[in-house]
Image (cartoon, rainbow over all chains, first blue to last red; front, side):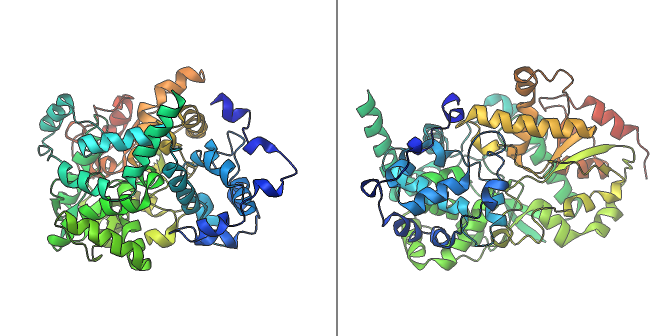
Length: 186
Length: 298
């Protein structure tokens, strides 16, 4: 977390040069499910004002939006900034322009994940779900406590069905990209 | 009235959360609502999974909805994360035809179909809008006057209100109103509606700690007998996470019990603390329970 405190803010390099800018990036994002609001952003900063993460570290949703609109594709998708949102939806609720920052972040994270830049914690949780059908492992201890409380026995999740669903869309690529990234760094 | 119910991943499998399930089952039974568990329920693929791949997540969540639809039932859930996911499924499927096509074909490949007809409701919102305060009042048998709580709605039952079909999202009062028949004092304190950082747990742990620290300062200064949570993540943060915050930030006087919202209702209906799993929480609930039980019978 030290790194975040030091504000690893997209190099923080100014001026931004043409060669660092991808003009089509914002349209790419706006074309995705949930990304439509991006182009309506006025950069008023209401999102940053209500952000619970911004109240403890130097993290500003407006800055993320600004960088996306500017076209700093590489910086945005490889930065840990897009993984700091706690998904409380306060900014989404307050935004007069209905930018829906949290949904835009989801699109950005999906893009980053396809490139192997997913938050390792979330990837680990997804693997847990593949294995158990739930994000938690069932334990004998809790099973016994359930019995003592008079709760019905836990049903086994439909793991096979779930795995098939998980492998049918883009998540498979996320795992592969993550593995490639890990192999590269070894 | 009959509803399908999705419990989520955490509620039925964690020691400090099974009391949430026990209390919810008792409250619904007490109010004459019949429930059927989603058969072989799987992960609802909430926000963190949507972060990895939205299409996959929508298809995963649609699996449980398809099961509810097969039974011809609308869905209740005590988990705010599940509630949010299921609401998003219907929203996405009805607004994005391309996505609908993809999800349909994924479901078809595992022998499932989802038309998008299941209405999902959070248990607390359901109790307020469908059952109502008068009905709760009629069934209440325990007076909790003198007991003060800090009620946390959490984020994912409320925001964004258009997606979730909730009227008040920023400064809601409905869950407080529902507790009025028991005479309980729900203290309005700064920070009670702010995020607890729960979704950052396991990904940005230090950040999750620092946000939780702020929330615990808020509620500690409010001087309440207990925190009452609606969201299972809020509960994990405030209950399981509390000792860690106490040590890390040297908050020596910190010791606030964390109660699940339906546990309060069930206590008010006359159920015993033991059958609601109140002895299973990380932070001991003894003092809180003693204060509740010390109150009179109606």
